[in-house]
Image (cartoon, rainbow, N blue to C red):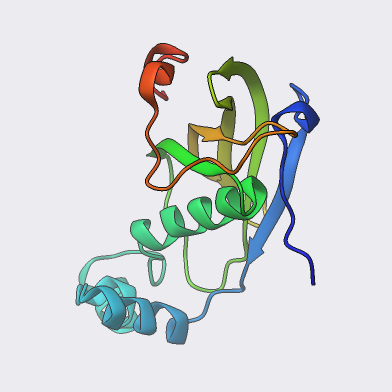
Length: 167
């Protein structure tokens, strides 16, 4: 299998990034994430506690798990030669066990920046009922078609001022 490489020249403002779907997420997924991150708040794995004591509608999907899904979507799109530089999101609503989450992104702008390009994206997450729980932005640095991969560790250099901070 050949690794996919995104080239700056192939990015078109207004294009959608391939969506990433996760779920339906179960209490087992949430318990495993709780164990991996040592986040033992019972609202993520103890249904009676979450519903009866905290009066929530169900088990909450961890915010950091949802953020990890955003990064996974962007990293897949950036490919082997690119770099996810900045991500800024707002958590707008809760997500519950049993939901299927769709992570999406759309190209908002692009600029040349020295040895690589920069692509600004609008990002979000919705469930199967179209309820948006995350909104934000990101900046990804893809290589030029005839250039080498964006170096690791990523050094933005004079590209720092190319875009305002993600909102």
